[in-house]
Amino acid sequence: MIKKVFVSTEVRKKIREYYKTAKLFIPHHISWRFFTFRLPSGAYTRFYRIKNIEQLRKLAVKYTPINIWYSSSLWLSPRSVKSKNSPIECKSLIGHDVVIDIDNTNFKKTVEYAKKVLKGMHNPEYIIQTSKRGIQICFKKEIDTKGLNMEERLKAYENHRQELISKFKGVDSKITFDLYRVVRLPLSLHNKGNIVQFIKDINLIEPLEYVYKDKVILPKSRKAMTDGGKPFPPPQNNGRNLRNGIRNPANSYSAKYVTNNILGTKGLFVPILIYHVPRFSDEELIKPIVELKELCKKYKIPNFYLLRNDEYLYAISLIALDSKRLMKILKASTSNMSKNEFESYHQIYLRVSPYDFGKNTEQDQLRIVGTVSYKTNKKFNLSKSHKCLLESLGFVILDKGRYVGKEIMKGTLTWKN
Image (cartoon, rainbow, N blue to C red; front, side):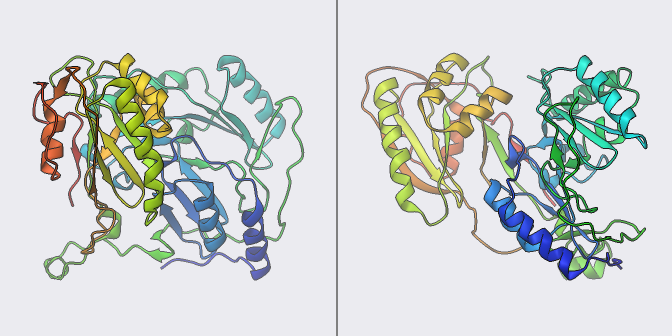
C-alpha cells in the first residue's frame, strides 16, 4: 500500500501554474532516456517516450509532480532497463553522462568541492543547485566503445567511472558512478518548493527561488513504482495468474532494432534518414520526399525505400558507403536525428517492431510508404543484410549491383517477455 504524501491543494495549483509557463530543460538524446516523476500521492511513475519540451510540459501540468528526475544513461530500450539485476540482453547501453552530485551539510564546503571538480574536469554541460546544500555538475563525456558487445560496453563504462572515484572522493558515488541512477532535471521543482536552478558562475551563486514554501510531508516507506499514476501490480508467478494472462506492465515491452552497419564489412554503412512526421499528418510527408529526390539526384542514389510509423518517416538506401561519404549525405539533409546519432554513436538505429503493452493493437507499426527512385548508371556496392530486412518488411527490391556483407543484421537486438 502506498502511503500518501501530504500535499495541499494550494501547492498542487502552484506546481501546475509553474509548469504551464516555466522555461523547461530537456537533456540531449532525450528519446534514449526515461523520466521519473514523484506524484503528490507519494507514488513514482516512469515515462519512456518523451520527445520534446511540450510533451514534458503536458505531463508535468497533468501529474503535478513534486520531483522530476531523468536517467543519466542512454539506453536503446529504456523501458527494458530496470536495475543492475536486469538480464544482460536488456542492458543496451549506448551512452552515459558523468553527473557529479555534491551534498554537504555545510553549503560552503559543497561550493569549495565543486570548484575542485571544475578544476579537474572542464567544460561542464551544466551546473545546478538542487537544494540549500546540494550542487550537481553534468559533463557530456563519451568513451570509445566501438566494436564492443553489450556486456563489454557496460564493463567499459563501469571501469571508466571507477577511475573517477579516486579523483573525486567527496561526491555521492551512488549517483555519480551508478549507470542506473536518475538525476534531478534542471529547472524542475524540488519537493521543498525551490526551483532546481542553473549556476552560471560558481563564484557567484544566487539565492534559491521558491515557487512555494508550504511543507510537504514525505512518508518513510518503500518506494512504489507506478505507470500513469496507477500502481504496478506485484509480479504474478503462480500458474493460475499466468494462465489468465496477467502480466506486470513493467515487463511487457518487446522491440527489435537494427543499425545501419553492414555486417561482414569493415566500416561500411547504408544511409538511413529519419524525419519527424506527426501522426495523421500526411501533408508533412511532402517536404522530406522532395528532399530525398534532390539527394538522389545530387549523390546519384538509385533508390530510397520509405517506411513510417506514428512518429517518424524512415528512408533507407541499400548503397554501401564509408563514414565520410555517408556524413556528406547526412549533412546535406534536414534529418538532424540521423546526423546526431551517427556523430555520437557511429551508427543509426531503426526500430523495426512495435511497442507491445500486452494489447492486440497495430499502433506504432512500421508501414510501407513507397520508393523514391532516380535513374543512374553509377554502380554501388549494396548491403545484403539490409536487402533481407526490406524484403521481410514487404518491399520489392529495385536495386541491381554487387551485394556485400552477410545476411544477418548487425546490431539486431530483441527483448521478449
